Image (cartoon, rainbow, N blue to C red; front, top):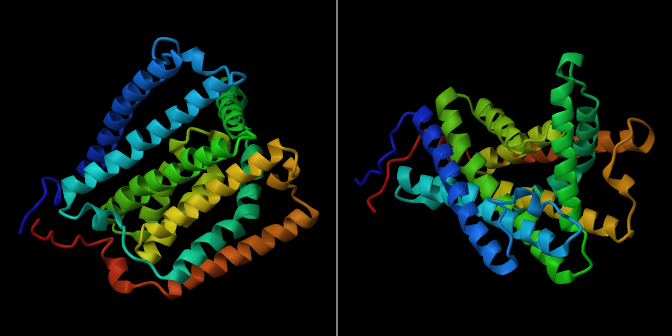
Length: 318
């Protein structure tokens, strides 16, 4: 039987290889993006990094959209595929691109919609976290990073152009959903399950790394929950399509809501949480619905497929 170079490698080594591929991928694709941006818009973010922070300039905003596209492909999609090829003769099957019941598709979409009040509540809770006085400098830095990310997101999503809106769906919703799930659920989570010997540990450690990767301290808790929900969808459906669909639903809803808010069609309060009144009622309903949908996934899981996350199947001859 054919074997790939790292099919039986130690889990720690596999994690190192995966992250090295990700670092190399982002470096190569940022270099490619810089060449394209320089050729089309005459901007080089390598030599003039501040040049891509003028969000009042529509061309610079478009540059950032292109940059995000290259980042997701280089940091997540390509490294995940290369890693799959290095450890298996069938990288698609290794990463979990298996068929899925229609009930799981519908359940993945409904769970993300149902989880919105819970995610908003965790965002509010995360904002209440204050670092000790001696870490005030770090808190200011983290706050500045949050503001910068928020400003970029707002600049990208504010558009009246339907074509740009669809491009936003591709760059902000679809590509991150595919790429991040390929890396964190398809590649990393099974390694962590093998390493720790515990499925729940693999789910939550990969979720924590997924949240930390976004480098947004005041969004850590909601992304941690999101990562865990996506992990359990993968664990119990044994198809990467489940977390991809759920992740895309979450991202696309965010893009759509921000788009509608920028046009004044809906209030910005829709995406916020107040720990009283109707918001508390919605939170309780959200927790109930998410728990119920997860339970249905668990009840309908495939035990054979579940075990394949822990024990690698022999590689078939290429």
